Image (cartoon, rainbow over all chains, first blue to last red; front, side, top):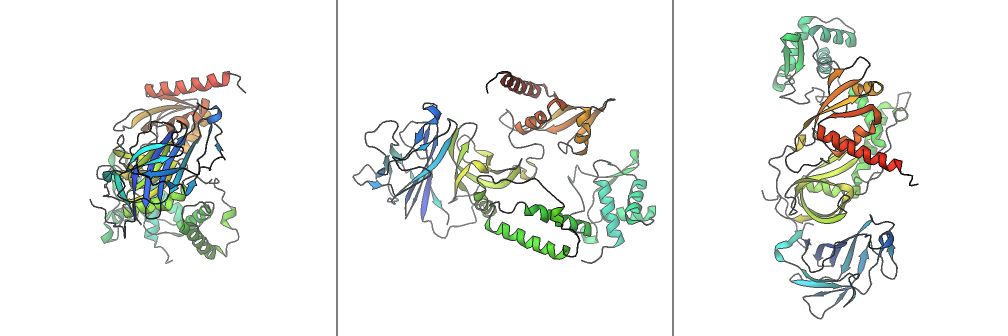
Length: 144
Length: 350
């Protein structure tokens, strides 16, 4: 049955569980929200026994997204639930987790994919995601 | 409030007798005794028979559609609860005693003030309390001093309550991030929400989950839900599942083991003589029946339930006073759990 509720205007969309190339079970890219105002990327991080006491997380303020593999770099404008480096969020144990979001300027809704780079040519410990796909069939309009 | 007629008061007393789980199947003499005792007036057998007839009448004819049956073998009356589960006429109108109960409930609600259910919630409680205060202003004692319910603590995720209720009412799918305490993993979920269910002081969102490995009705602890967003998508209606009774044969939410259709099983428990009266006065579940009363006061009770982790936790909470007899597979699980606990306590770790 079709939903009776219709949005007054679809000013953005989400992509749940977008496809990308990074293989990492501790850091999960969960959802992208693209609106006229911003591009919000939601992550989940599970502390790991790879590091004593669960380790720590932070995000470099110069983190950026790069739409369609082009030359335009859109720098992080805000981060929620995760500190900007050099400040760190230290976990108390390996069973802790963190849901956090990184906010970037808006991107063209027609964008096919983008890279999210904390440190170009960095290590596995950097929050780098290449080829995050914005497949049309996964786009779901927001209800305002 | 207009005074209730004698007939209405008699109907309510008959209803109380028919819904009394501690003394089911009242005879005509039981009903007459209960009415005379409560109303302090004589009542004839014919009057009570006429009352029963009136209660059985349809609402259009001034009755309650009461499914009252007579069992010849026991010469007693009962509600046909197989066809009309949980039937009672008490939902029709309120008598003074029920008004008093609402006053008490308002006092209980006061303890929930401050929980972030939604912006209107606290306001509604304030209005209810002030209304009740007007009614009880001439009373010598304030009821709020007479009742002391358990304190309710704030649960993470309650800030989403209003959004989730709204999505259920308007039938709008919701995207949210869920964190599983067991799997220690996040998952991005799109749900078609049907209801919010409370169990053991925790709230759960129940609905059809679109996740590839779900594709069925699932429940998600509200305390593990992050950032719900309403999305414009065709809403998948629930057509096959009886949501009203989905949790009737469960204590808690989390089923043990099996994947697939859940089946209630007969759970048999031994209860010590020290604990028997407590279990009799407050049954563990409405399906509780008594299989055996032993000379020394121990009892064997049976429950018809889907085995859940919450059921096992409940049984274990009674310690030496309760023992799970059957089913054997669940007993094995309980034994393993106890062995793990004992093994922990045997090690001097602290």
